[in-house]
Image 1 (spheres, rainbow, N blue to C red):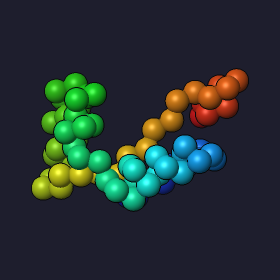
Image 2 (spheres, rainbow, N blue to C red; image 1 turned 135 degrees about the horizontal axis):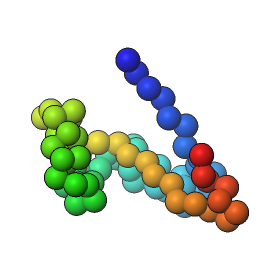
Image 3 (cartoon, one colour; image 1 turned 135 degrees about the vertical axis):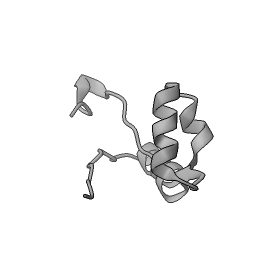
Length: 68
């Protein structure tokens, strides 16, 4: 089953981050340092031989407008 997640992206900073992390996938090591050992293991099982992954994250903006 495929899933789609919609993330806000509305200014020049967000557009730059889109290019940096979606169009140019991020090395797994850069992500793994923020995960628990179990999360890292599960990510590696999911990705198999891939060494990069497109990622996107948001932080709460003014008035929590980015909160879903």
